[in-house]
Length: 242
Image (cartoon, rainbow, N blue to C red; front, side):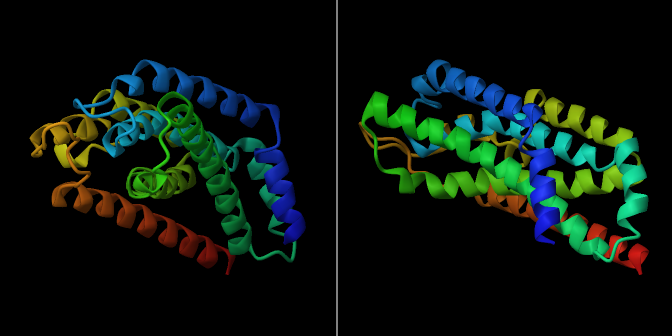
């Protein structure tokens, strides 16, 4: 199993394609920080949890597309031919699927860590800001539901037809430009830019980072749906292997 893990990491993450995506993410992240985040969001400071959350939301589409591209490798014609050989090996099929999903998660969260690291550098150098514990909750609420939902949806669409994965990629891009209303804003950018304007503000201070119950419920719903899709998808794989 260890050799399989190393092989999947090498072919998915240690290649020019993924390195190129890291470079693109880095350039886009720095551009977003220096052009949009530096001005703050909803009249809050650039280093407020609201501005940081809006920055992460702006970065999510690129990271999500990366995860879907990595997932699409497993449903390519070449991969279908390889599956004939892997099915004949003593390696448990479910374990193999879980390893693949874990490597995709590793790549996705590496990109997230990269863009968060750039924001830390930006805030430290430009604003001498150090209170990064305030960013933990915004990061979890923004990143985790997006990944789990897309991973589950991507896994199932790929099982049905590999072409549907590319349709899901287009849909992900569309959600960035045509945002879902209010609390159901998938990436959260529109929500983070508007909700602080509804909160009470003390003179000279930013509104507290308090998320509405509706928004938290929507994030939980995305998380649950994605988790159910992943669990049922792996269960179907187990049944097929059996």
